[in-house]
Length: 208
Image 1: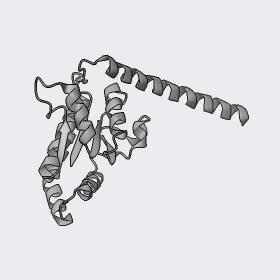
Image 2: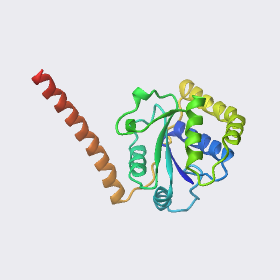
Image 3: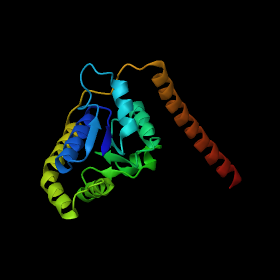
Image 4: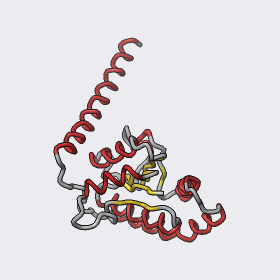
C-alpha cells in the first residue's frame, strides 16, 4: 500500500519526515512517498510525483500554520482527491485547528498529530485497508512503542515554529506551462468560490 505524503514549507517538511518514519516503523506493507525523502537527486521531480500520485492508495497532507494557503499543497491535495485509487485523504494538523482549515482542504476529515487516539484511528484505517493487515493487538503494541518518538518530534516542530523563524522551504520546483496553468486554475477556482459565497450571502441578506 502506497501513501502519498504532501508537504509545503519547512515545518511541514519536518512533519512529513516524522509521519513517514512512523508509518515505516509500524507497517512493513506500507510504502510512504514523500518528495523530501523519496525523490533521488537528478530525477525528474514532476514525473516522480505524477507517478506516485497515480499509484497511491491514500494521502496525508501535512498542514501547519504557514502553509494553509500553499498553492503546491492545494495542487497535490486536488490531485489526490481526483485519484481513483486514493481511498482516503487526511490532513495531518500541527499547530492548526480544524476551524482554521480553508476550503477545499476542509472537506477532508482531519487528524490532530498531537492527539494519540486520532492518529491511532488513522493507523487502524490504514491497517484495515491492507490486504494482509496486522492483528489488532500487534498494531497496538507497535503503535504504542513508536508513538513517543513521533510525539517528541511533533512537539519539537511545534516548539521550533513558535520560538524561532524557520526559513521558508516552499517547494519551488521549476514548472512547465501545463503545471503553471493548473496552479492558475486553482487560484481562479478559489476566487470564484469566494465570489459565489459573497453573492449568496448578499442575496440571502436582501431576501431576509
